[in-house]
Amino acid sequence: MIQVITICFCLLLIPLAFLATYKTPSDQWKIWFPNRLLPNGEQDSLKHLLGRLVRGNDRNKLETTRFACDRAPHSVVCVANQQVRIETANLEVHMRSYNQTETLVQPYARQEDKELMRYITPVHILREKTTVTPKYCYYTHKVPVIVFSSGLIGNLFHEFSEIIIPLFITTRHFQSNVQFMVTDYQPWFVQKYNSVLTQLSRYQVIRTGSNTSDHCFPGAVIGLRFHDNLAVNPNSIPGGYTMLDFKQFLRDAYSLKVKNANEIQKPILLLISRKTSRTFVNENEMVQMMEDTGFQVIVTEIKDMFNLDKFARVVNSCKVMVGAHGAGLTNGVFLPQGAVLIQVVPYALTWASETYFGQPAPKMGLKYLEYKTVAEESSLIGSYGPNDPVITDPQSLYSKGYQVVRAIYVDGQNMTINLSRFRATLVEALVHLGHPYPPN
Image (cartoon, rainbow, N blue to C red):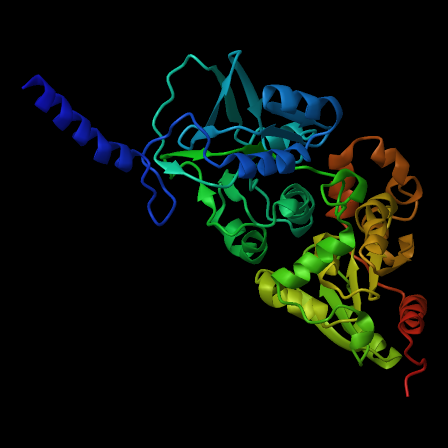
C-alpha cells in the first residue's frame, strides 16, 4: 500500500515539474528560479556585451563580482552580468552576492546638475546574500534590461544630448536584443521617440510605477553612458561608432531618403523661426533676401517640430538650415551629409553657441558657418543703452552666474539682422554647395 502511494505521488510531481518550466508564447514565466535564464553559450555572449560598457578596474570587478558601476561627472552606469529581479513598484533591483550591499543610482545623464537630479527617481540596487531565499517573479525575459529615466524635459537639445544619444551609445551593440524600462515615465517621450526606441529595442517599453509586477532578466544596465553634448566618442563606445554612424541610425529609424546634400538639386534652405526669445525682428526681410540670393526657403516654427517623424523628413530634404542659437538647431542631426548649418549667434553668447552646436556640427558631416551679431543688432542696446555693462562688459554679467546670463542674453534679447552682412554668409554657403551666385 505504501509503495502504491509513493508511486502515485511521484507521478503527480511529473506534471508539476512540467508546469514549473513551461514557457508561454510571450516568454513569460510564473516563477523565478535562481538558475540561469539562458543556455551557457548565450549567457557567455551576454557577459561579453555587458562587459564592454565598463572599463579598467570596473571591468575586472564586473568579471569577479558580476556587478560594477562606471562613474563619470555626468553619468553613472551600473552593470550586472547575472540574473536580476526588478520590483517595478518601488524600483528595486535584486541580485545575488556574497556580501549584502545597496547602491542608489539616478539613471540620467546630468549628475552634476543637483537641482535637476532632485526630480530623478533613484533606483535601489540590492545585492543580497546567496543564503536569502529567492522570491517569485511574474515575468521572465530572455534579454537584458536597460533602466533609464525619461527626465522632466521638453527641450530637443537636452533630449538628444542626455537621452537619445546616450541610449545609442549604451545599447547599439546589443543589436536590439534589450528591454527598456523607463522611470519617471513621460508618455509624450515614448510617443515622440517611438521610431528611435523601436529601432534600438524589439520589445515594448516597460513603464515603472503603474506596472507593479516583478520582472526577471539575465543581466541589467542601470543608467546610460554620456560622452558630451551631441557627441559620440568612438574611442569610448562598444563597436567604435561615430556621430556619422548615429546619423545613419537616424536615417534608418526615420526612413530618411537623402544621405548626401548633393542628391538635392535645388538649394533649399530651412529657416527656424522663433516667437518668444532670440527672434528675428526683420524675419520677412530676411526671407526675401534669402530668396533673392538664390535659395528656396522653408520657414518653420517650434510647433512644427512636435511631430518629429514628419519634421525629420523636412529637414532631410534641405541643403541649408539657419537658426538662432537654441534647441531647434539640434535638428541638424537630420540634415544630409555635406549640408550647411548656419548658426546666428546672439550678442554675448559666443561660448554657448560654439560649444553646443559649432563643435559638434563638423563631426556630423556638416559644414558649419556662424553669423555673429553685434550690439547694434541686439534689442539689448535699446533696453539698456549703449553704455550699460550689459553691452560694454558682458563678462561682468557672466561673473554673476548662469541665471543672470540666461535672463539677459538667452531669454531677454531679440535680433534685427544686418541683411547686407548676413548675405555674405549665405553666399559662402552657396559656394560650398556648388551653386552659382548670383543666381541664374
